[in-house]
Length: 120
Image 1 (spheres, rainbow, N blue to C red):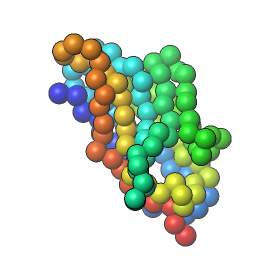
Image 2: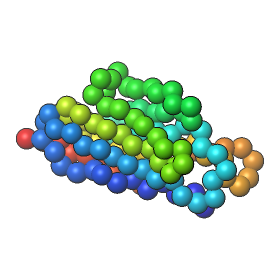
Image 3: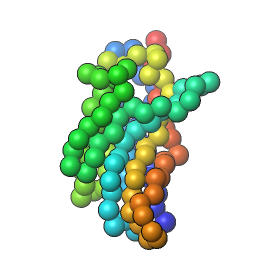
């Protein structure tokens, strides 16, 4: 059973920083893409940032230059460093990963989400 567990959410003021972490556990043979998505109230879930096994990063235009995604292949973890946070960054942030476990082909897994609130 593969699980993704997020940590690091919270309440911050505009302009402040926050770091999210996500660790994968269970029977894992390989991890392809890891990343973060978010869902604000009344909106659809959207991509924030992803990173491949060899380090290629992809960001949503709204977070470029402010957020940085990184991963530790040994620890099977992915982090999201968020700087210069804005109220519009308020959302539930979900960890996402494509993982090869038992069974045919890799599958997409999601964490339960962690709340990030940016408010003055």
